[in-house]
Amino acid sequence: MLTAAVLGYLLFTICIGVYASSRVHGAKDFMVAGRSLPLYMNFTCVFATWFGAETVLSVSATFARDGLQAIPGDPFGFSLCLVFVALFFARAFYRMDLLTIGDFYRRRYGKSVEVFTSMVITISYLGWAAAQLTALGLVLSVLGQSAGHEWLTLDRCIVIGAIVVMFYTVVGGMWSVALTDMIQTVVIIIGLVIIAALLAGMAGSDGSVSSGVAKVYQSASENGRLQLFPSGGLRTWLVFVAGLLTAALGSIPQQDVFQRVTSAKDERTAVIGTLLGGGFYFLFAFVPMFIAYSAIVIDPSYLDIFNQADEREMQRILPTLILDKTPLWAQAIFFGALVSAILSTASGTLLAPASLFVENVLRPFAPRLNEKNMLGVLRIVLVVFAVCATLQALSNNSTMYDMVQGAYSIVLVGAFVPLALGVYWRPASTQGAVLSILAGTGVWLVVLFALPDFIVPAQLCGLAASLLGMVIGSLIPQFPSRKTP
Image (cartoon, rainbow, N blue to C red; front, side, top):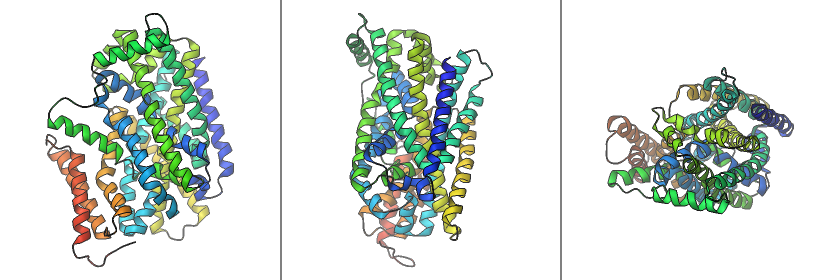
């Protein structure tokens, strides 16, 4: 019954994608929904795209095991990212009337920087997309095997989930993302709040929600889970800062963030929608953390899940808890909310890199590509990217949180400085951008692979090198000429 309900929800999502296809008449509709989304749709796009599988399954499990100090990137870093975008970048992005983040690099620095940064950003999406597909496969596998369908292995379910997400995104593009995000946000909020209240009652000594919340909070506090800042030496602090900045700054030069800003109906909507989405994301991200830690309070034997050799297994704590401890109606609500969170993020992680690759990597070498043909190429590239993300999901053994953090590291060292200084520092030049990219990625790779035990994490070394490269490259004599806006 439960498996059938989830499969029915997936079918419903496909139907939304088919309906959304009626609004797609060209590449602009496909990539940014014709720049026409009202505030409520823009807000839900921002929230639902970021509130994904790693937040519900991986971040919550990491918190239950290690506490807040182990998750500086999510929700703290990602929430800061959206606030920074709203306050410092949204107006600039919207006024430029661009289709992709890569268009900014072309207009500011030229074609070579556009192509390279777009490739870097596109590649970074593989880890994020793979994390979402892994999560969807995990949910389908848990449900299927609990119903006795042993053939629904994790790998097979990853493929099934990838096909569903790929289909409705290919058909409807950004309109599919916007419409499904609006519905899925409602399901996520209502579903997780109901589950949190139910588990709070189970954790409380007298069965009340208030006593359960107090008991879970007290237990988390006494066991050090609410300690935000690390207590170790300098290396521990630098790792914490690196995780925070990787999410807060490394996720700013991302096509999905850019698409949600520029798909708003006007500049004010873009700013407010992003700011509201970031604020609400930060607050609501603590709900799945509460649910995950409630599992330990209700039944301490769930701590055994954290001791398994395969770290991915700890991400099963929430699905296992719900299936073991709650009635069927609660299971339907939870898995409906979870699937909604995964689908809303997964669709964005496929659409964004496909849009960026076609517009800023392929199109510069095919200037005669017209609007109609470009829409077809967009859909083909999206399918190819979905296949690549699926293959990575099938072969990667990292947790979803680690996969997402790794995806943003290369963007932090290779694309953030040229973007930020390109907007706010007039002397920034093409030569400076090239040197910034080469220095940032080069130092990052050297420290990551040749000096893994270096006291300063590779991301921070790469970020410092990127900033230094931009300043030096922009201030020394320009060869052959200086590029300014």
